[in-house]
Image (cartoon, rainbow, N blue to C red; front, side, top):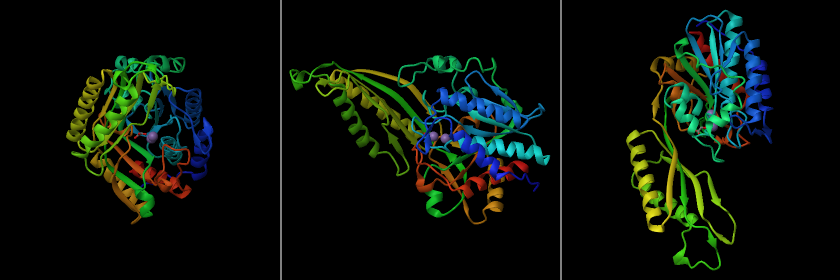
Length: 400
Ligand code: GLV
Ligand code: MN
Ligand code: MN
């Protein structure tokens, strides 16, 4: 195999620099289109230019670093936005690993490698918004009407980057395939003492934003029987879906009500409105469908029983996605060479941009361990040796 010798100090130095944008405790607060996110993207664009890549922001703020020659090449990367409380490596690692492999390849006379940082992977507007738009899974005019949890539209949010963005999207036919490097975000590799995971399938996800509207009233004078309490509706909904899901799920199925906002959220007021998100994930599309019937049917029944008004919005559906056999084989032989007997093939329980990019071109993923399996948490971390090894596997797979 031709080799692309990466420079570990440059990889780790850039990762640490990216960590400084939106730094909080040992993690980052860098949600899509925040000042910290845009500043990080501008810095990344500069690093791409220094590496000989042309930085291009597309209309939604996805940042591509394109090699000079217009001949089709491999694309690698991930995302640099974060959860509202995010770790320093989620997404950032895949972007910087791609950047390092791209410049190392240029230095070694290897193949050109394009780099990408997708926008809003973490779902301020649902999930994987930037790559859903780029891949054609979500029309731009539909995306523009999506709202975040504060009610701001995607159109308003992306206007913050308007001065940086090109009028057109980057043509997907510039790329021959996509490899995303990522931290595992779960405990499997760490517990097994292994250093590389090659992904076979990314599980599917569905999610909905739900609003129950009742009637805000005095908590002392309103008889229980007369109440239209939005919070009690939410509690009944959560309990009912737990019981209904139990009939159809497997131990690998997961579901989460992760955001709840009550109005007006005061101890002496019957809550008039409950806004919440519900998401569910599984590797089987039929099960995701059946869970969706339960979510929608339960919300309707609970609202009818309690005279609440129901609104559903921001529906997200990303199907379970198998990774490309050819790229997977390249990653597997690179893993076997770099980490003999210390790697495995595994599914991804987290969602990734590769699931959308797979609509356009062959796509594959590799994982490095997450210490303690912790992610979406300021304390997320990975051993330095594993960060270096992951980039080496990516380099080997790209060098073929
Ligand atoms: C992406 O971060 C996910 O929630 O899986
Ligand atoms: Mn991620
Ligand atoms: Mn994430």
